[in-house]
Structures are given as structure tokens and as C-alpha cells.
Image 1 (cartoon, one colour):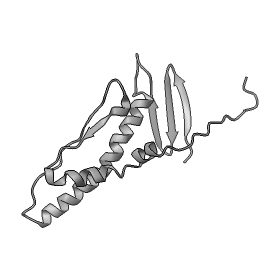
Image 2 (cartoon, one colour):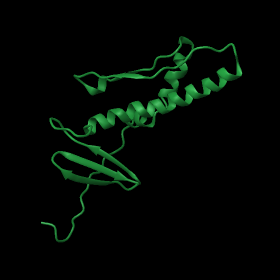
Image 3 (cartoon, rainbow, N blue to C red):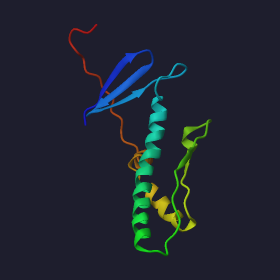
Image 4 (tube, one colour):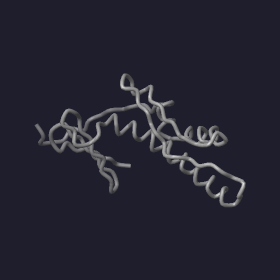
Length: 131
């Protein structure tokens, strides 16, 4: 996937890939989330995709069995102001689904990349005519 990074002004830095744009900015006059906030939200939304998949399968099972009960509610991420690395996500659900929800969230690809980080190979390309 090719990604184009653009500098539209001020402290803004935007990323373009495919048909998507991810806008970022820095305080104090931020018009978009900071790159760290985008990164942290990617952890929550990635885990959420897997939790949602589990929740949808439970809903299908619930329809098939009148004896099943309970629901999975909206997640509420909590952040540590001192360190983003102490962040925690709490998914509210019936006790019987707790372990399954945790296993589902553990499948998150963003989380796995943090646990086994990629090697960063940062280079530049010299462009003729730019001073």
C-alpha cells in the first residue's frame, strides 16, 4: 500500500492512501486528532472489530436458542494521562462471555504489531530541483 504524507499547513500532517485521508494536527489549535490519538484509536477500533465479530456470532446463536441471554454493550476505552502505554479497554458484557471477548480482542493486528514491532527503515528520496 502506497501512502502519501502531505503538509497542508500549520502543524497538520495528513496521510492519503487508496481513497482515504487521515488528517492529524497538534494542540493547541488542533483541527484533527494528533498522530498519537489516531494510533491509540486504531488499537481500540481494531480490537473492536474482533469483539463485534464475536458479538454478532453470539447474536446469531441467541436467535437460534431461546435459552441464551445477555448482551454486549459499547466499549469504553480509558486512557492514562501519564502514559498512553497504560491504556486499557473495558468491554461490558455478561460474565459468561468475558473470556471469549478477551480472546477476540487479543486477535487485533495493531496490538500484535506493538507486541512484535516492525523494523523501521526510514529513508529519504532526493528530488532534483528542490532546494
